[in-house]
Length: 221
Image 1 (cartoon, rainbow, N blue to C red):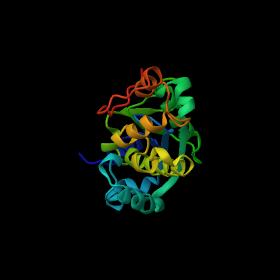
Image 2: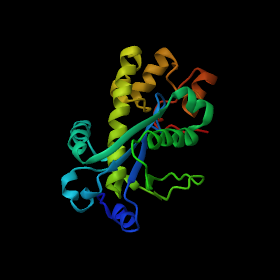
Image 3: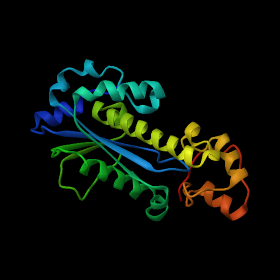
């Protein structure tokens, strides 16, 4: 399945002229922020999706492809904004709420008034704005796919910056995910201020001083 403008065209046909696609990245990471992006395309692009050739779920693209697509999408974007929540605040509010907050920041940061939202998997039940929550939305909607790419590129840059501040954890390489290299760094140096201390792997480390190698998920309990 490749993303299309089918969802956008349906909303547009029902009177929505300004439609934002919203997605997040970094929920499963052990360190660093969760980030979200909101993207509004010019509605004229809905009938010319070939102009966005290559735009897809960010997880199915290489770093080089994502960076190139951020540039090639710019002429067709009416407004874009990014939101983020730090590791400390994720510990305070939980990852589900932190994800919603990051998405809200992105939507509120747009320079246009939005008529409808297309959101990857998340809903905002208390918002009056029309919205559709799409499972695997980044593989169904080009607006959501674009948001996933922009959020991913922005977060990767943040993790590269954190790597210069705290180079011993290798953030530039693994971006905060629970890779074997990240586990090894934790064994040597222990968790840092950039880690999500309520995540089960980090919490276990605090309690036992030990590490279960081979575990690469990031369960938040």
